[in-house]
Amino acid sequence: MAVKGGPADNRTRSTVSICIVIGLCCFFYILGAWQKSGFGKGDSIALEITKRTDCTILPNLSFDTHHSKQGSSRDLVSPVKKFKPCPDRFTDYTPCQDQNRAMKFPRENMNYRERHCPPQKEKLHCLVPPPKGYVAPFPWPKSRDYVPFANCPYKSLTVEKAIQNWVQYEGNVFRFPGGGTQFPQGADKYIDQLASVIPIANGTVRTALDTGCGVASWGAYLLKRNVLAMSFAPRDSHEAQVQFALERGVPAVIGVLGTIKLPYPSRAFDMAHCSRCLIPWGMNDGLYMMEVDRVLRPGGYWVLSGPPINWKANYKGWQRTKEDLEAEQNKIEEMAKLLCWEKVSEKGETAIWRKRVNTESCPSRLEESTVQMCESTNADDVWYEEDEGMCYTSS
Ligand SMILES: *[C@@H]1O[C@H](CO)[C@@H](O)[C@H](O)[C@H]1NC(C)=O
Ligand SMILES: *[C@@H]1O[C@H](CO)[C@@H](O)[C@H](O)[C@H]1NC(C)=O
Image 1 (tube, rainbow, N blue to C red):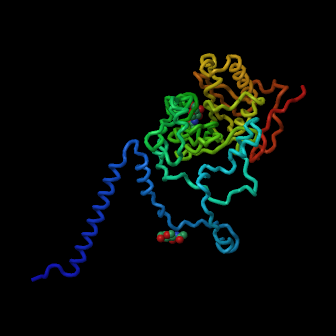
Image 2 (cartoon, helix red, strand yellow):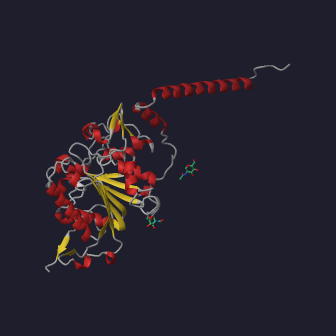
């Protein structure tokens, strides 16, 4: 007769019970997580996702460079230096965009909103801490629409831009409905409208620049159309809207069109876009339009929506005079001609120009004698280089 419950059998049984215990743990854990999650419960969703983020997927990445001459670079560098966290009040510290330093620079041409980095002796040697309660952002595409409140704890935009559908605060998460000042119906509809003029769908437009991007919903919604948008906006006096864009997983930088060139090579973008971006396009003899012209490739598109386009219908709402708006639009049209851009559409508050593919196809160009482009220095030499204006000839 066989004896039941030998040592081997015992081991099997204990393995089975361990499995059951682990299984039950997992079950209740998931049940708990499921009960806690749900619409508007962003903190628990965020917590879950943080727990699931497995930082050990690639445990042995080698961060050494592989181009040093002798042996491993590990032998050459001194031991890794550890930095302590900065005090909590530095959570939003962006060294080259420090409000106190910015105010010492001229307001003119937005100079004070450009990069002004601290001198050597004012540099902090600590790590900028995340805000209290920071959690890993949601994975894309959920991150396009939700950001945990703790990651960017500023509600002012939800109040300021409430009717424009930029961002809403819903119990510990921010929700981004995809609206903008110029597209309260959502970025998708707005992009559809642009796509009726600009060939966005067939691969002609793959890169875009959004000047004065707000929370970057335009760029966020272009991704599913296979267009990669780079968005920028200046830092506000209190916080950077770009922070929301980054938490959403949308490429963006703090930046401004001011006295120096944009940090992009020439002809890098298929499309540039400004919707109520508050950039004074008509000022300084069109200096900022020239900078857009530099970064647009031949055949690239420039979209301008909002003031002054369609001023006849909107001047009251914008609280500006007809004369002022008309003059601004005239200046823009005139500059566009000089730059050899062709106006391809104006519908409602949206106007679209196209940079001609070459100057031969530019009708008015040769007749213009009083104004011409400067002999360009290296157009790709852009880092901290001043904007280049028009050169006036003495004819
Ligand atoms: C990384 O780990 C994997 C699996 O353990 C191993 O096969 C691989 O050789 C390792 N790579 C390096 C660079 O050490
Ligand atoms: C995309 O569409 C535009 C406008 O219809 C056309 O001019 C262009 O040749 C098309 N490009 C490709 C790659 O199909």
